[in-house]
Each structure stands twice: as structure tokens, then as C-alpha cells.
Image (cartoon, rainbow, N blue to C red; front, side):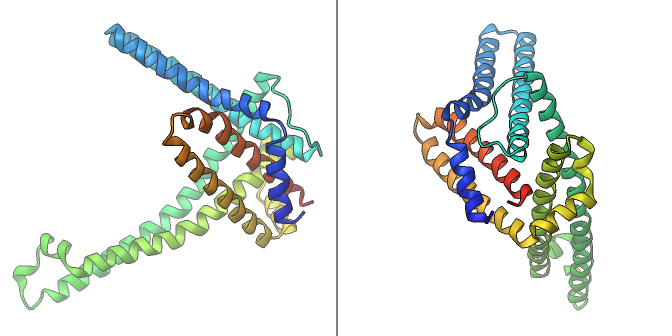
Length: 273
């Protein structure tokens, strides 16, 4: 399946059952509403313990809802891999919660791994540039030792350009690392769904072979395409957010629609059909 067919199929799939989209949206929206009510009740109670307890319960409810949303994301991928063209039902809530926790753990572990891969070279770059900047600043102040002060060096043009260069090089590192993180994480989650085994999410050799069979270029184009769709949805959400109706439409319709769209697109990409 070509990328344009992937996107069109995923969009049509996501709008094939607005009832299920709204159900997923309710799972997203209701916990925020509950937390708001709890904060209001706690505030008017004038009791710090009650307020803290209600906030804790509200956050716990939101966390469970987050697991459920992640679990449904995983279920849509699994359903797609099974060749089904209908959205899965909302049942077996315990399984949804456990699957959502698994997805969160996979995302967290890969975030740590790729975060380290990004931070180490960025740290080395700033360390080297800092030493170079210090050397140039010191060399430039040899004619006038009175200028050799932290304030002078920090305000000199040398340090400003070194800072800009460091930021530029950091972006050059973060973009490919972020792209690789996105690809490996979602293909890993799909592999976990396909093999029905959490360890498969970290089977790097299998993930690499799957990406190679799909073709790296196709995977990257799909990331760019879904990024475009997501950006358009964010712009719509921003406009709606300026209106009262947007407070309800964004969490109940747009966010769950994007979640289902991304899950379907990821599953189709993994199948490479």
C-alpha cells in the first residue's frame, strides 16, 4: 500500500464510527472534568488535606484513562494486523488497561534510550565549543588583561556565536534521533502487537528487518505525511480552542480521531500492504 493510500484508508477508518471516536473522547474528557470538579470541591472545603486527596484521586483517574486510551491505540493496531476493517469494541477493560501500561512502558524505555543517545553528543558538543570559546576569549583579551572576566567573556560576541552554533548542531542531532525514536517505537509497538509478546517491542533485529522490508524511505515519508495531518489537526484545534465549543470538540472528537488514525496508519505500515 502506497503512503497516500495508507493516509486515505486511515482517515476513512477513523471516521467510520463516530460513536467509538466519541467513546474514546469521553475517556479522555471525563477525567479532566472530574479533576476540575474535585479541585473546585476541595477549594471550597477550605481543607488542605481534602483538596490534596481529591487532586490525588483525580490524577489517578486520569492516569487510568490514559492507560485505556493507550490500550485502545494498541487494540486498533492489533485489529489492523489481523486484517479487520472495523474499529474494535470497547470491552475487556482490564485488558485495555494492561495493554495501555505495556505501551507506556515501551514508550518510556525508548524515550530514555534515545534521550541518552541525543544528550551525550550534545553535551560533548557544548563542552568542546565551550572550551574553544573560552580559548578564543582568553586569546582576545591578552592585549588587555582587565577584560579577562566572566562578565566580559559572557557578553563577548565569541560566546554568542558559540552558543548559536551549539544550538544549531543540537538540532542537527535531535532531528534524526527524534525521527529514529518515532520509527523504532511505533514499529516496536506494532511488533509487540503482531507477536503478542512485550519482549518483541525490543527485538531490534526484527524491527530493523521489518523497517528494511518496508523501506526506510517509505517509512520516513509516512512520518512526514502523518506529521502534516497532525499539524493540520492541531491548527484546527487551536482555532476551535478560541471558541467555547472547541473546549468540548477537541478532546472528544479531534484527539481521539487522531489517536485512531495514527494507530490504523501504523498497523498498515507494519503490514506493508
